[in-house]
Image 1: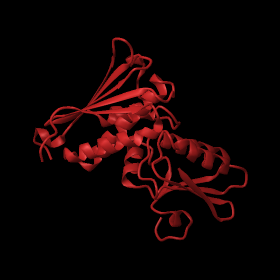
Image 2: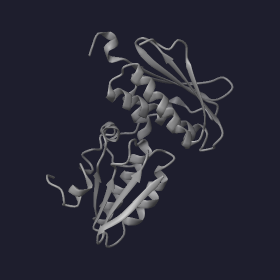
Image 3: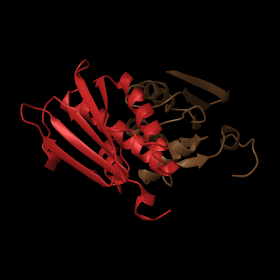
Length: 144
Length: 114
């Protein structure tokens, strides 16, 4: 199947009601790239959690702000950039919580780190953060 | 989001959310679930068979339910988890924490198996 040339952009408001759109796009894109079912589920969850964290932390639940997702479809990987224009978050403070404790909250970052192969946060000049998420296709290196 | 609450037997409640449980809809699940953990309740079952997707806020809501059930010595069961929801529980290393059954009838003691 032919590969989409060039990045795909999705510009959504910082509204939880818009998250289903993100999930739809990620899920279909990952399926089309022939990721396995488990990877499709995990990548979808990770990107959804990244956007939810943006709404919660960068925008403090303010609706009507922008979240811009940029999907880069490569032969061996899917790369997703989540850009916000809100309060910059100190990357050192974004850490998954310990899982030994049974308590609500803090799971989102754990999901992102567990699901994606690469995760990096970068404060942007003029404000906001760029979160870069990468998932490699397992079979791109000759595996199953 | 629609969240059905039924009492199929006295003091046994079945809570059934319909649709994705995410950051936007999990407060509605919490609103339906939390009041059921009151004195006299014996068993709360969450029927997840109509939930195609659940994020960490949905899981956090169920953890809150679990904690309330522990406090009140109330049985708490999750039923009908689909593979996508199950994957999120696996990632959170939480599947062994909850009592999980394939369908509501099993939780009610009406189905075969455990």
